[in-house]
Length: 488
Image 1 (cartoon, rainbow, N blue to C red):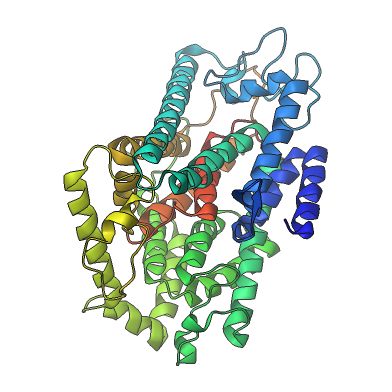
Image 2 (image 1 turned 180 degrees about the vertical axis):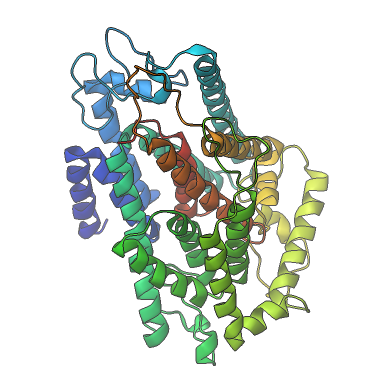
């Protein structure tokens, strides 16, 4: 193993031991580090998964020192008791007796039937979420054993299923305050900024750009930044950019958005452009407004002028540039990229006719696809370039239903948060939540919902999960509305 890899991982371990949240931030910043590969006792590994496993080891140490941290993962709502509520999951030492992270429903000041209903809903959602995660992992395990190459499939399971879900739980245990959440978004912002800034530099200088993406025309050059494919860069940037558009701006976020949107455009990922536009339209028109002291059922739908203005600016710029205008208009005619998708989808549907329940296992589509005519690119693809077909083919019907179930729970949580009324507040009682807590939570929920929509919409014609960095990003976005702490 390269000594610099060992030194870097030791540095990561030291930082994580000092502050576990630092490990989370470094993993987010280092998402492209999955390309740094090495072996441990003959087992292939990447720098990214090395960081995740080291942070998991640090978490185990923290749990041994303070087992109360695990209560954060309980599907039961936190309840006040003489021994205190849920512990702070930041440092190993627990809070003083009787203190903790107080959620809205955990306070004795908030009572009544509505509070009990909310508690019941939280319990049901928590239990259902864990059931679907277990089924999701079970489907992946089964797919390892029915795969054409069990060893390769085991590697895919480790990198795309086990470690990303492990990271999801590390996030739940570690990001336990508004300040940590803010820094988490700062790390995502810096990720976008450095990938995009180098991508723009790469476009101008060809630095580290594979010759296959140079193109004869300067205008049609496609960037990869520190990744290996333009579409891979677009799939990583798109969800984070979408969330940054939804969140309040500061100088760093404005700078990241500026570079990020330019780099996103220079990937020339037409699916990414269209997914971004569709996501902004969906957020502007389909998300209901919160009610004033009541659930906003059947209310007038939200129409956000800033989002519509952003969409108008993006569409105008894209169509004002001849190259991008021509690329989009090509989709209405015969287009090699479009034809490739049709061939892949046709092959996937035919494969599923023969294996509708189990699919063909992890890495199975690539092997099965060798028996079908290739598309215009003459490349044997790893996946059918569709979110739902890929899960069905690779992990069977159980994998497909479990990921759909997880998405349904995710958007039910988003909807409930966005439409939630202000917390009950009776005269003479001290309000446990700051006045803007509901607004902050709704903003976070909208951002997470938009980020997940970007992932799913883009992957209707691409592969947005079955890749080391993208599977981590999926669970990073997924965890956001389920983080449970009181906002300051």
